[in-house]
Image 1: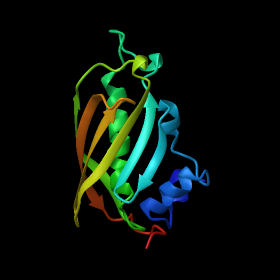
Image 2: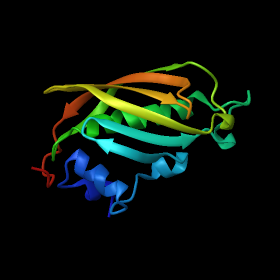
Image 3: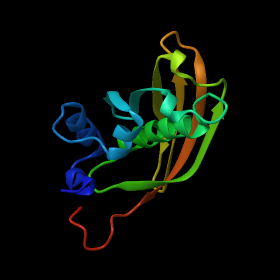
Length: 156
């Protein structure tokens, strides 16, 4: 069964609730980066992750792609949590601002994202990466285009 198959017939929020309950597996990308979904409600998600040394670049800090991946995950999933059955989207733009270097010393990071707008053709969200004390490490926004399911799919 593919990840697409597990999502079939579920709204975004239903999919994430099943994933949090352990009824559906998380996408492999999340496992690769050690990203965990810890909270979900319609239009809002929270993920956690640690900037482990395996994500470090040559300067001894986590590569910017780690923060970008964590933010992209949360930003997209916030939008996904507001999608009804059969509605899909893809990223048009991802903008991130890194405010300080990320290292494992930051501990468990929290990345919260919230939907700003869901319209007929586009959706936007914003998010932040903070440590346990609330110190900001990065923030960002995304704009996504809402697309129709492929012809012949089993989606309504």
